[in-house]
Length: 129
Image 1 (tube, rainbow, N blue to C red):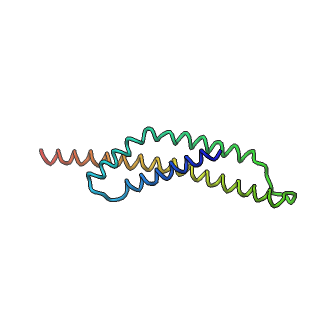
Image 2 (cartoon, helix red, strand yellow):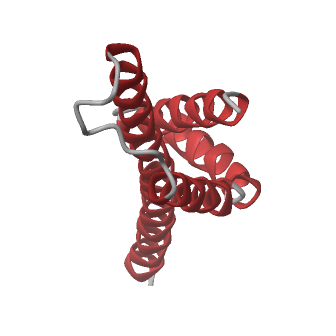
Image 3 (cartoon, rainbow, N blue to C red):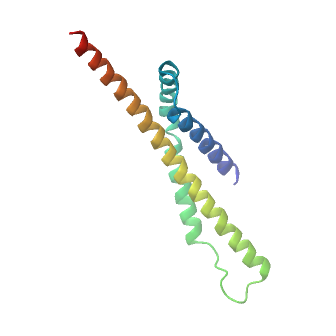
C-alpha cells in the first residue's frame, strides 16, 4: 500500500521542480521553451488530480474506521502504532493537497505566461501600425 505514496511523493517533487523552473528568472527564449514544455505535460499530468482525490477519500474512510487507542487498556506498542498511523495519514494528506496545489500553480503560471506573450504581440502590432 506504500507504492502510491512513493509515486505521489515523486510527482510532488517533480511538480515542485517544474514550478521552481517556471518562476526563476531566465532569458526570454529559455523561459518560453520551459513554459511550452510544462504546458505539454499539463494535460497528461491532470491525472494526478483524481488520483489525489481518491487517495484523500481513502484516507478519510480509513480515519473513520480506524480503531481508537485512547483508553488505559492499550499497551505502549498499540499506542505507538496508533500514533504512527495518525502521523502517516497526516503526511499523506499533506502530499495529496500539495500535489493538487502545485498542479494548479503550474497551470496558472503557464497560462499567465501565454497571456503575457499574447499581450506583447498585440502591443507590438499596435506599435507597428
